[in-house]
Length: 439
Image (cartoon, rainbow, N blue to C red; front, side, top):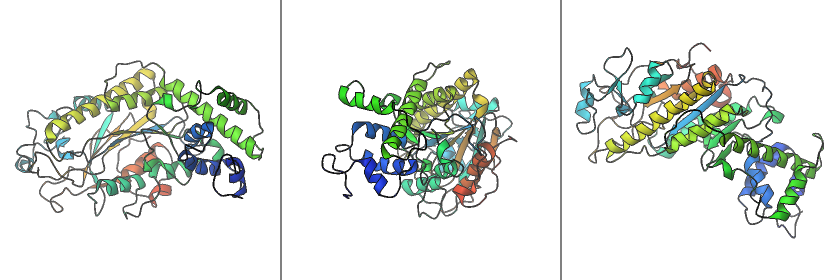
């Protein structure tokens, strides 16, 4: 039998998968991903269905064994290496002013933290200050890992896989989710907003739904090709038994799952917000997440991204803009969750792949560094500062030394919040970072 798909001269995708060793949902998902790259030769309904099926979208709303009912984790990736020293500012340390004569924030600019002397927040993080004062935000100081890598790609891969060896691997979220998901209960367990699914969300079979605009997460030929639409509808309205192993029956069930997922996501995102939102890209992503949470999708992890943090030059204005977007978006997100009654079941993590060097460079910016702060949000988090601010004089080749391993933060979120076994993704149990209250 031919091993390449030629639509007019060879076998169907269903027959080919069946012949290659069994016809299971996960096998279809795995091969479905490769189908998406063959746009010129794949039937339209399989292309779009495959995009949805990448998450094994069965849309079941029943409780999943091993998961805390209703709890959601939102991950906010700050790409490029956020300057932690100008985010959580050690204004009480003379070494800060000496190292950054042109980049430092003056003491009268920095926002005070409740009950904290000598450390404040970037002037644009007033919304984060409000969340901290309300007990809804914690700052994890000095987060990093041993033998740090200053490459964007390598360090981000380390954060995504929780593997500091640099050998690569599967994502910490994907591995954790599939470690407790029966195949029949996968659902829209993880959802990423963006043009590609982050490595963090990928497991052996776990694949998130990923889209930039919810309207594009649909059957492509609807309203454009009447014969194909009619065929697609016929497939999706033909009842098949759940235990029917016939290849066509399997494709019918899987395409129906994709259609249901697509319709539910688009309906959720099209809903109305209860509060006012800023117009930044991050805010728009989180607004979609808030709507999907309110619609009670079975999603356990949402993933969003804000880029632009590689501030090698002219940092002050660029960082001001990014901090404004970050602070306003997170405040709007939790205001909306409060208005919809969902705030207590959502915890968020904001991280960057590394911090910046202590000394400013000659271009009014900062170069790649090591340790930096991460943020956690929600009713369940420990508010205020968590851990010790890194020393500005006891350095590692000019960089801040980390005090809290990022895998300890993951441990708290996986085990303490989502009630998952962290060893599935981390390889071993790490000590708690203390980012959660007793939950």
